[in-house]
Image 1: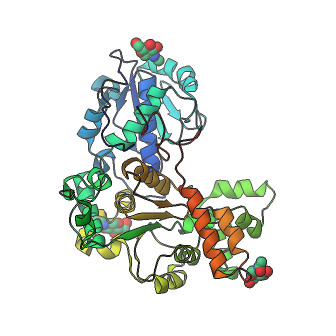
Image 2 (image 1 turned 90 degrees about the horizontal axis):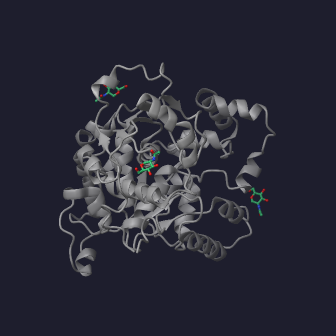
Image 3 (image 1 turned 90 degrees about the vertical axis):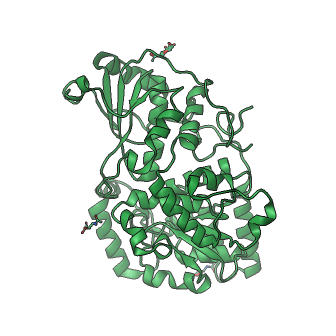
Length: 447
Ligand SMILES: *[C@@H]1O[C@H](CO)[C@@H](O)[C@H](O)[C@H]1NC(C)=O
Ligand SMILES: *[C@@H]1O[C@H](CO)[C@@H](O)[C@H](O)[C@H]1NC(C)=O
Ligand SMILES: CC(=O)N[C@H]1CO[C@H](CO)[C@@H](O)[C@@H]1O
């Protein structure tokens, strides 16, 4: 069921008559943008529209001015999808001077429901498109549901995500340095390497034993314990009054809507939140988990993500257990890192690749876009040999609450069972993301 070698062309079909142009300004960071792009491709096909190469909205959180062509190969994207959707780099000049908002063609996420259905687009967007010849989805996010959806659109999303979006050489090259330096090995080992690193990772060795020799295996960990996540969760992480104040201040600055919502709802205690599995795993808990799974002291670990909250104290237990910890900042020299310095999305792309090509990938939050898109890639291109460890936070909270009474052996058993259940091979369920779970008749499992 490897996804690598489909003949996609001519199956989906494209209509020559265009109903107009769709412009998209995608919201969020790298991974949300990726979802928005592939949803927009599907919507353009649904509405028989011409897609203008998506743009990325500047966000005060991510502070990255990168545009499509700074991250993905434009020509490649256009050409891979050319049999299904017309994609142009810019709006044709007669339309450029139009005031999109004044003619009523500006469509924000407030105009479309989350996980909208195709019929919503046909009813709401198509008439505007036909009348004005152009619509602009401004701040486009997760606005197309997964089911029910005509299978040709589902296939198109799959093709977009797994085949059409290739990182630019600048990103592939820096990512290949990360991967080579972690593995201490220079050649590609899998389809994942080939897909994500392109020519920067030459020659897949043909025999399996060549792979093992002289090459280190590594685990990539996406430890989503960054301040935004920690603050948003409203959980208690044992840092006392100063932690509570700091996180409350962060919420007031960055999450005014959350603060509003909290005012009018019944408060949930931190203990309750923990029981419900709503609290991000701390570095200490992640270390405990890995060691219960048998990862030995000295395992090579690539840590993805940005600044860990309270890293100085919180990472101590982790690094004493796992001293061979590397990040993109430690693997690249300052001059290699310099071209990426102010571009958080491009840095996130390096993490995406290092996680997707790792021997083992461990996430701490299955709701994270990075973690879920990476796990989808590992499923699609990993040939069944790219395990992803996905803890169930609710079960883990239950296991950890038995702190003083549980014996280490029991702890190990229960953690292992939990992880095994998370790894079970599943066909995509109804309503589930095809990006995250590509095992589906419209994606990996086509006959
Ligand atoms: C798109 O084109 C196809 C084939 O010409 C047609 O059946 C379908 O109704 C069109 N859809 C829209 C929204 O124009
Ligand atoms: C990056 O951003 C910082 C602060 O915003 C600025 O001082 C610096 O010049 C920028 N560096 C580059 C390479 O753009
Ligand atoms: C089940 C159990 O023993 N829970 C204990 C875990 O540790 C906390 C504080 O250290 C105790 O309050 C719990 O009773």
